[in-house]
Amino acid sequence: MSSIEATRPSAALSCGTWTIDPAHSCVGFRVTHLGLTDVRGRFADFCGSLVVTAKGAIDAEGTVTAVSIDTGQPQRDDHLRGPEFLDAATHPQISFRSTMFEPLGQGTFRVTGDLTIHGVTREVALDAEISGTEQDPWGNTRVGLAVSGKIDRADYGLDYGPLLESGGLLIGRTITLSIDISAVRQG
Image 1 (spheres, rainbow, N blue to C red):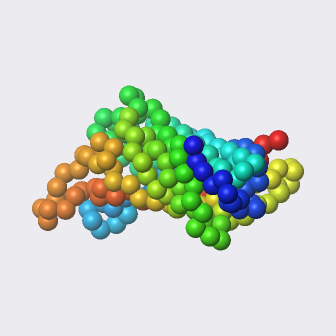
Image 2: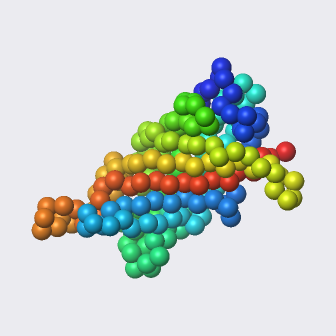
């Protein structure tokens, strides 16, 4: 699966399984509206993990419940859950599985993997930065990661978007991902 065999990715990611803590993490996004402003949103229901082998290879996976989309505006959220966008009734999950981690230095990585949205899987490259580890008051070791990247929603069949008089799109095609993760080491 993913591979960093020769070098340890970071002292922060010790060997083992790290499970995402949804209460202290956020899967967010933003997209341009009318070419003027960004609308931000998040998914409230998600899970995931990182597995680090003794040789330093990392596998990451995550799943988001599509119906949990929240932009702070219920009517828009219902539209986004519907068939013109996520079609959450037919495609209830959005998923990611890494295929490669490339160390870039100083706790940063390029993470390549398969992202499935709306039943369509495409390879994406994301940037990740490890902010470090800390022991919480309950004795758990946690790692913090910030993950970011951009996708074209049309690549996933999410091509709804009336044209404006100016010729621009009502809703931009580029979706900027912003994922903040707190993961707990198991065992």
